[in-house]
Image 1 (spheres, rainbow over the protein chains, first blue to last red):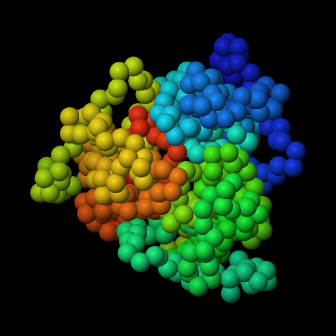
Image 2 (cartoon, chains in turn brown, yellow, orange):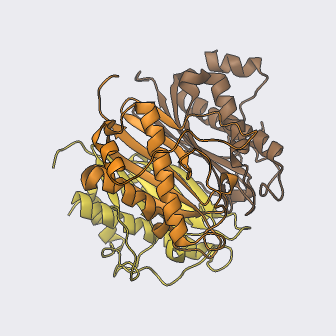
Length: 164
Length: 164
Length: 164
């Protein structure tokens, strides 16, 4: 077991099963695009451990509390890590976090997007440490997100240069 | 004629003329930023073949049907290919699609952004094939877009290393 | 004094002090992520010279005029330059602007996002010139932004290859 997975286990965190999409939904793109050492991550929403989309849907500032949004952003992070593990084989191959774009499904007056996306950022910095885990970040309010999910996060990371 | 343009022709698809902006609008940036092998594409909306912005404007979930949005995302793709051809000379120079950020002008309850942006993704994968054409993707709901366009798409691709 | 800072001085432009966050706000990420020659800039909003967030808040098309938004986008640019200077030591190290993602807090019917983000783009092209300063750009409407700021801008630039 790698270093990152050992940390996940020690914190009692589970990586979810592959995304279970609602019936009829086709997503003709990969969750992870690897090109050389660059790894581009599609927008990930929260997942339950069985891979389903959690039932809590809607907008921050209207349907979802900031504290709930924080937990959903953390679940979106675990969803992203599960995608990385399935694609790379080993999470330790991720050597550098670069960019995080945090999207919060927001009622017009909601202004606490950073407090929501901190659920993602604090997970990543906890697992990778400050040097490798820190990332540029925007945390902003969207008018709507697919399936009514409250949070979606896109990112770019770098992996080691080994050919595998 | 290159491979990609031959495919476009065989499917009866036309690349639009340069964007005709509404009177008084100044856009002080290029549609395509080439730096080494990285090519960064500004947000492209749908265009009619003559370069004008199609008259169908407004929000998905309110003014525009999902099936119409799909066609507009496809037209945004053709707009982007036209910009690439004007900048690179030859579409075959694009060797890898990397990242696609699909923005859908959305009423608050609209949640089918992926089905809209599939109009773009399916065009690219049809033309470049699965290996080169696949891309990381987010498809998300914006509160508003310039000129009231229903769809805008930003992307990054890579080109071959030849100096030209 | 470097070339870019001399230009700033000749135009009477001041770089703001470090961001003063509202009480209780924690932002666990850096404003600038440097990795090799790539520099990824977190979403920056407008700042007053003392580092505080300017009092003009809310949405374009409702609370803020387009001409005011233009000035706020320019202030977001100065905020970004201040972050770059603090991180890099010298603004002249930025050799190439690559990507700008301009986010405008927008009422549903507002459609002049490009005219707002031009306040940023015209500043950068004025300072760096057309060759180095041009960038791919999207200028789009968000449902909400942190602290109710009217404009937030994310970017990527490249720096020279010197180890320092």
